[in-house]
Figure 1 (cartoon, helix red, strand yellow):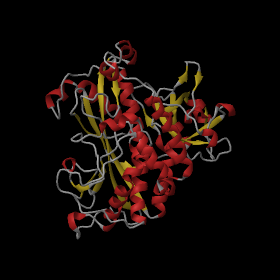
Figure 2 (cartoon, one colour; figure 1 turned 60 degrees about the vertical axis):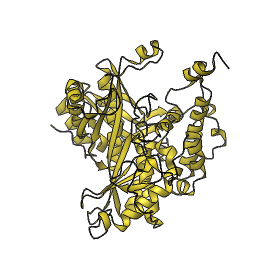
Figure 3 (tube, helix red, strand yellow; figure 1 turned 45 degrees about the vertical axis):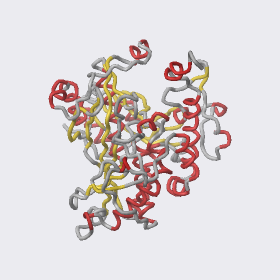
Figure 4 (cartoon, helix red, strand yellow; figure 1 turned 90 degrees about the horizontal axis):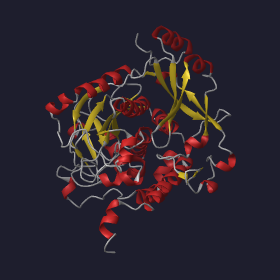
Length: 470
């Protein structure tokens, strides 16, 4: 029996779980970095706590990817929270409980674990008030803004990732030397895809069980790199799909003694991993794609031009939301399949924004800046916020570029470091207007901490270059 994905009825959900032998529910939500944080509950405990939600320490809102600790003992908090005028977790406050209130319509079967379902939720305070800095709540705010204008956003994500041999313990023992699943690139190779089909086919089937539809899979440009394209969905479901997809792939690959990596640039010698975001905007009442107008050039409507105008106007200021780690910026090089400039074109993969004007249903806009390390909730929210900003302010884009955008200097480049990108985000009037000061200031505090951690590191390259002769 198929999981009733759209149901919000606890009784219907309970009946389905009983019929299908579901014994475990993974309940949680994504943190700022797009990492799924949660707990496993026996089904009876999960159903008993639906109304109030599930308690987590609010430390979840300040942990980093590596969960930094001071000398391995004490949690290091990002500095600046003491001057933050809104909600911010601090150890002086005892890291009290916050609650993830589950959204049953997000429930998915995690068939790579026996008798298990995953459920996403939203962060709330004990009072029941929404915590606006929660990733899912950030996207909900933009979705509500779109609906107030009569629009609904559909999104398709294109994640790329690497598969490496061994687990993280073996990787640490090797001195963090990455060994790809195969030694050379096999772009679109049917032969290489056939050799890996036992694993990749298993991923596709498990994703289908989780209501994450994979349209196609293929080896990509880097050694051991794959791309599995997700079918489009309404914006919130698309972001939930992204979290299930990334977490599921990591777990399935780990079950084979391998490691999946969604870093934007795991090696300077290899291609980066993207998360290109395809988006179409629909009129809620009329059920039509408002980006399309057959009578106009290339089938792009006036609303579509304004949407692109907003994406371009906010691209540099929103880059930190699309490229959230210092490593993200190492992907921004020519001929990297990344959008590296404030530019757009019709079916042009060298520009920052690619417009595909196929027909009334297929017309869409692809944002090519985000990397695979992006938080799907925040990145989709940034796309929607930028597009709506353009519609509300009737921003006209320049002429579409038809040449090689990597080979010209006529366009502004995107920021070249997270530090530069955070400066632009912090000063952005559009960011504060669309997201609110609470989220923008919190995001900047968290990411500046990451910049400082990165600044203090000494790399192997530095030692090789300067160690003997400096």
